[in-house]
Image (cartoon, rainbow, N blue to C red; front, side, top):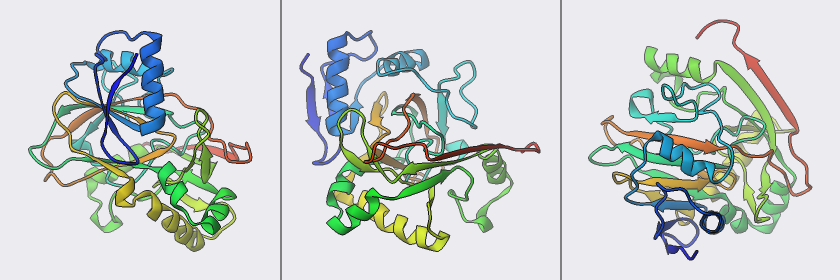
Length: 293
């Protein structure tokens, strides 16, 4: 079928009209949506009326579902649905979902449930556009780098601002500690596009010191977060956003005074990231906690 697609920005994002995603989709429609996702990286669907089961059914058109999260509890009775709730903190850091595991999700869906009267946007950035914008010397450097991704670091707030509740949330998030090395430049398995596969969970460049790693990662990350590469999505009721987790990063803006904000996330299982030389999965380590959080 031919979708009614309306671009949001030059590099990322399109609104999708003319398809009812609450109903089973035929193969042609799924193929058209996949192609639209390949091109636009993030798709916005308005006026959708889905429950958790319907959101999972839609996501399954793109592949098998993952569990909600490796360490964070799912919605009761729905192991594939993650509550993204302001009462449990905010992911106000640039990241790609769950890159600290061997095969991060290939795609994520977010569905609006409760929204604040202002703020609460989700920013989604194209790491493909960022890679294309790198000067040639930086591109050659990035092509040969690997980064170690981990969930075990203080990404949310400075240590002095961690209260008892946030300490408990962090302990839960790191109840199993993951460290995985992935290529800094990932080749998209469907399009062949190259994108910077970094973000907040990428904490160290393999072979560099911590300080050297931070300098290199910050430099590359500055291209991802250029305003021209970002879709700033202002949520409305009954919306669903589908984005390609293999070639984007996102950031939940914490600008709503802790008013109620709740989304549900369902992710589609992915593959092992592959670099330009065809290699992937350099290292992978999982460390369970020996004491309860």
